[in-house]
Image: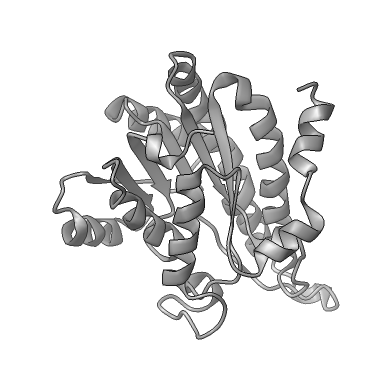
Length: 260
């Protein structure tokens, strides 16, 4: 299977902090020297990132709010494709996490829940739909293209305290398998990145990372190995054992059901 080393230009959505930021910078350092486009809604962070890491001139930035209205989002993505016609890989790393206690239904903030659902799942489906015409076109020209989804180890075994987050990541996990099967014949390679618990801003107030889980530096190193190998699932930490126990054979079974 082709790997990230074959990518000439990759867009990392949700790269102003955490895993997305770390992976974007690690990809920038690949020997293949791709163009890396960091992307998010916080322009000041994007500007800082480019200013501090762009000695090569290969780091670009795009401001994008994944929660914008559907047609506006489509127009923004078409503009990205027009600006970067060599774009052959998109990584979806944006996400939020909230706790919900359904034993106290009066405390459930449905606005927050629905925002989490849109950020973590619906917006990803929209963006994939809008990027695919370009990626399929490149793929049909013989150039491998890539969709990198980011789910979570909680898509395999959920944490009850964050039920909606786990559900969105389970949806991304299922979608990734289906798209990997469907798009294989189009030379669009769908790779699911499945992180374990990694201390980032996702798990606390902005700027707080805590002291738990697999350290971000170690996680990034392990994930880059899988990306370079071209693994269909990119695993690290405790997720390796959970995936082996519950998920082995699922992609192959889905392909068989689809007639491949």
